[in-house]
Image (tube, rainbow, N blue to C red):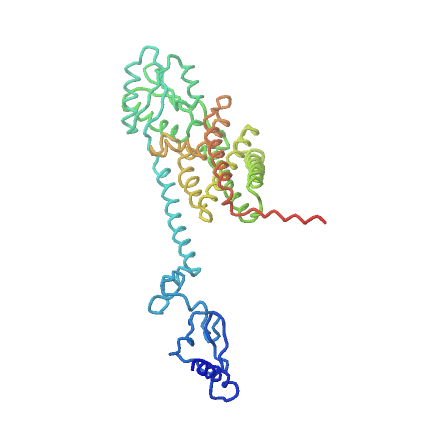
Length: 419
């Protein structure tokens, strides 16, 4: 019986080829059985069911992108099948354009606000003043000092010196901004326009008024005036500003137009444009316009160091923040650094916070070094150079440490196999 049943089953399988009433089956692999006669598949037959997501199924003609689930964050449609406006906007060019518009608008307001806050209404807070007190002060000098503090609504930070030459030396060292000493029945006030034109102007305007109120003669002299081509003392601020701005613009242009440069090569080219740019600034201001009589070599090196430092600050932010590196660079160097540098308004007249931090930033270091080189030759300080060098080394160190994030460079060509 078992053999007969077995023969019957074998007969039934073979009949399909000639009788036409049966169906012939062929193995289609792991995807399931496939009807060889091209007939419709029976959805009730477990052997005739296929995964509708199987890309090998010829019946599944849907676009592969349509198979994504509604939870896919890249799917611009929400769960209802309708496009999500935020997803569509987020992946459109209008999103980046909107971000840029908002950043530029905020930057414009901050730029105007920072400079207005620093320059619009300079107010004296503390003015270092040398007082010659061979007899520990006279009543006339004390009365004048008190009158000046009331008139300025500020304090004269007094530094006592036994002789006038010692007090004048303190002016050359930029320790004090003025020298006060007794002169007959009145007083003599020596100001230094080169130390700070704005401070000298404030003292020069206030001193005669105080003298008239106290009924004493007051003689005001400018013992270290500004150069004729720079009557307001702004030329140094402008050339330092040019070095700062062009310094980081040069780094931006290298990152855009010379992306194939390796990190070491980019640093070398930053040095190159800093040297040439510093020379161009000094030559035009001194030889071309005659606005300042510069100690050319020293001023050139200060400008070159400023440009290099500014360029490396951008390069540092470039590996840290990528395409948004201009924002922290602009904030540090232009919004904060330039107003607090003391170039346009001397630090005793700046708001207290700006007066303290400005000397520690690259623009302040550049202005201080250049100012001393031009007007106080032979009394140069190391501090502003240390500030510039520290920022330059920091920029180089960060840029080199994270050089794998440097947006550029070039691949080393493969060596050809030797035959």
